[in-house]
Amino acid sequence: MKRSKSSLSQGKSYREIGEFWDSHDLDAFWDQTRDADFSVEVRSEVTYYAIDRSLSQQIQDMARKRGIAADTLINLIVQEKIQETA
Image (cartoon, rainbow, N blue to C red):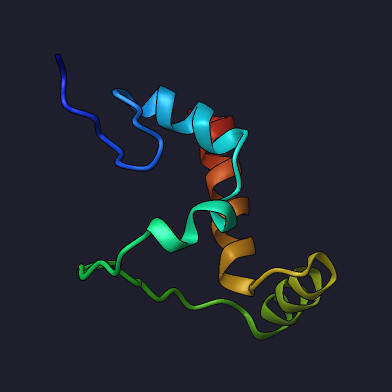
């Protein structure tokens, strides 16, 4: 028999584990959990582009209205435009 991927849910697949946690609350199992040590290495790259000052202000205003960071808004707009022209 295949070994369980999860000691709490006894799920043998990620789907089974997901279905279990969709219908259960971790609070009911908290005393059965154990500490885990792990490290995460996040690699990101930032490239800077010059933007006209008035355009930058418009971007910041629009981002603020949407409740997102200006760089996030820029990435969304550029990604959308690239998909339109591809």
